[in-house]
Structures are given as C-alpha cells and as structure tokens.
Length: 190
Image 1: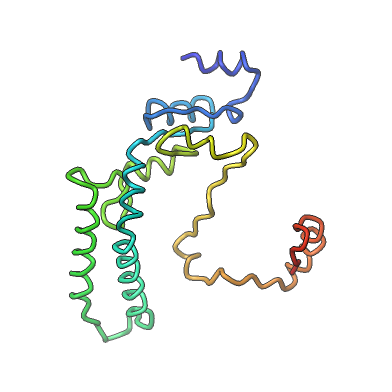
Image 2 (image 1 turned 45 degrees about the vertical axis):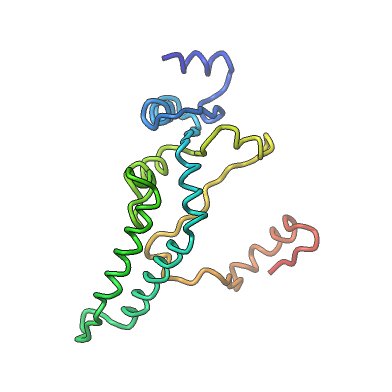
C-alpha cells in the first residue's frame, strides 16, 4: 500500500525500481500493474530444475531430435498427400522420454515443464516477471550498470525462415555508416 510513497520519497518513476519478491501474484503482478515497477521473482526451486537439466540433458536432446525427425517426416506432405507415415513408434518413444523426464523431478514433477510443454506457472513467470533466479544473490555476478534484456523469441511463422545468415543487400548499405561508427575495434562491417 505504500508503493506511491516509496516512489515519492525516492523521486523515481516505476520503471526505475526493481522490486524483488517470491510470490508471482502478491509481489510481482501487483507491483508491476500498480506502479510499473521492474520485477525480479525469486524461485528457489529453480536450483533443482537446473540440476535436472544438467544431469539429464540427453533426455531433452532426444526429445528435440524426435521432434525434428517428425518435422522432417512431414516436411514434403500437405493436405493433398495420400501418404500417411506410421508414427506410432515415434509417439511411443516421445511418451517414454517425456515420462522419464517427468520422473526426474520427483513426485510433484517440474515446476516449469510437463514433458516438452511449459506449465501454467512457467507461462505466468515469463509473462509477469522481468527477471527471475533461484536467489537474489545471483546479482553479485553482474555489474550495477548491466542491462538485462530478454532474448528474442521467434513466433511460429518466423521459425520457418533461416535466420543464421544476414543478407546485407540494400538495407545493409543504409546501415553501413552506422555500423562503421558503432562497431568494435577490429570488427568487420558488412
């Protein structure tokens, strides 16, 4: 209830404050909606999640490989295709790997994933928290001036385009003067 007073006393706007809390709704959502504060969610369970991801990375890679295999299988088929590939063995393997992954987290399962899908909590965390970590102590690894930015996330239609190579073309020529001014020493420009 005193968030207005905090902003007034400090002489800052909401976006200039990083609010840390451990409750997605009571701390994070309220402070973000009411004052526009930047938010940091403390999720102690994240330490266990990262441990499982590290120890069982082969399961996650296998699931990704199976998904890629399915995508390649269907790549040249469309609604006019009469061919129907038998994917029953692949589906069984995906179910088996997903079950193995889920069992790695214990009785309650992962806080963030159910198989290859994100849980409701994970979706809420991504939607409402600007930052999150297992502990606020993680900030010790960053300078005070560090600019935290979310990595770009491709939408489904964007992920079908190869983004690994940038064709400079005419657009690149328009950017060339700016790139020359802002590139690092020794870094080549377009």
